[in-house]
Structures are given as C-alpha cells and as structure tokens.
Length: 328
Image (cartoon, rainbow, N blue to C red; front, side):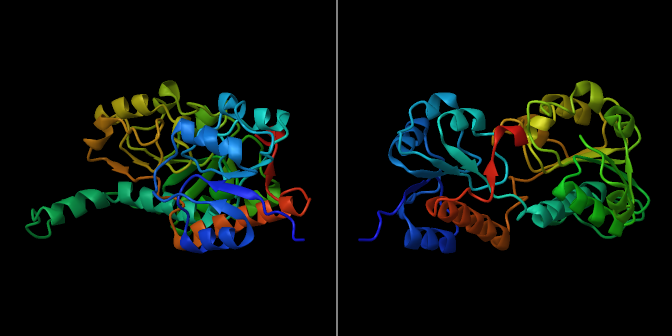
C-alpha cells in the first residue's frame, strides 16, 4: 500500500504552478482568498498539519507553537526571512524550520537600485506632474536631480543581496563602501571594488546613499536609529529593501520632514502595512508595497524551494534549507 501523504497547510495564495505541484505531491489545504490567516486560523492549522507553509505575514510565536499538534514536524517558510517565526521554540518542540534563501537576490538588488535612481533623479515627482497634466514644457532648472556616477554608496549588510547591490552600483559608476558583521575576504573586496568600514557611524557620516540590506535580528533592530540617522549628510538618501525594523521609521520621518536628509526609498516598513501617514505626504520619499521579490520567476523559484524542502523531509532527510537558531 502507498504510504499516507503528508498533510500540508498553506497560509496564503501562492503562484498557480506552485499550488498545483503541492497538490500533486501532498495532501494540501489551500486558501480560497488571499488574506493573512487570523491568529485562531493559524492555531487551527498548526493543530492539524504535518507541515505548515507560512509567509512573512504570519507571526508564529511561542504561544502559537504551544498550541501545535504533536504531528507538526516542519514549518516550510515561503520566504527567506524567518524573523516572524520563533525558531528556537520550534526546535525545542521538535519542529524543523526551513526557508527559501538565495532565489530573490537579484530581484531585491534590482529594486534597491530602482529606488536609488527614483529618489536621486526625482522620478516620482516627474511622474506625478505628468499624470496631473501640470507639465508645461522643458525648463533648464526643472526637477533637477543628481548624477549617480561618482556618488558613494554605503551598503549595510554585505551578504548575497548586498553584494548584488554593490555590483549594480559599481556599474553605474558609484563608489562602493560597506559595513558588515564580518569583513569579506580580500579577494571578494577586490572583485567588488568595495571599501570596508569597521565603524558603521564613520561610514554613515561619509556616504551619499545608504542601502540597508541586512536581515532583521535582535542586534539589527533600529540599527539606523535617530542618533545614527543624524550622522547622515543633509544631501544623502537612505534606501531600505531589507526589513523595516532596521530603521527607526519615526526618526527617519522627522528628519525627512525637517530637510535633514535629502530623501528616502522604502520597500519595507517598521509596522508592516501600517505605514507612518506622514511619510505619504513627502515628495522626497518613494514608497513601494514590499515589491522587492515580486517577480514571476522569483516567486515560482521560492515555491520550488518550499517543495524541495518538504519532499526531502518526507523522504527522511534534513531539508536543504533548514534554519537553526545559531544561524540567526
């Protein structure tokens, strides 16, 4: 007799090819509507599933894990970041956690560069002018932005995405600087033509663009706090495609409003979709709805990683993208 298939609960709608393949391989419960599960719905899913497939919109903390059924053995996260999952508590309860690293590197780096260009070249202001029918023709001093070539970019977090941003920035003629928990090997620095700063404060004070590309951990919460933001040059801009919690959003808003920072491009926010309303009022800010990974190719590749992690686990092996507390 064929063995019983794993029970898999998916918390959000996923791309159609991913959902179809999940249904072919496992006993899957899919969502009919694309909205986050409520806390009670998550608790129910944890009680009935062998494998849960959550996303960044699902907070799975110790209290929820305490309600999980004994059959729950794997949380196969659809996404690279796992700061919304209490990995340590899951491990204590014998539940493995996996993620989908690597597949979104280029997509997120592309979006970081798009935000840099949009802010520095004042693209949204020009777009708004055209959409409102206010353009009356070319003028020598209208909507003057800045040239990217020759500007210094300070990359906060030099992992895969940070390095991809560095390569793109260098192609635009920018001078690449970085701060990271660990310095890169000399050969990698040479290839990227990147200058390392042990002191984040010293780097921030000298850059024209700050690109936030580090993960969200307890040690990076408000890494760009009010004190550090005040070190930035008045004509500098900040771009964040990583996690909103790394930047003190209220302090950033105050400084942008006061003209103490020239501009910002944000794809992530400290309180999820609850964006500071004062940010929306500013013409020197570009706001995007967490689009960094939003490519067809990237989202399908994320699903393929989820499938591989679940299938490997089902076959009795360690998921290739297992996350353990020591990695965080």
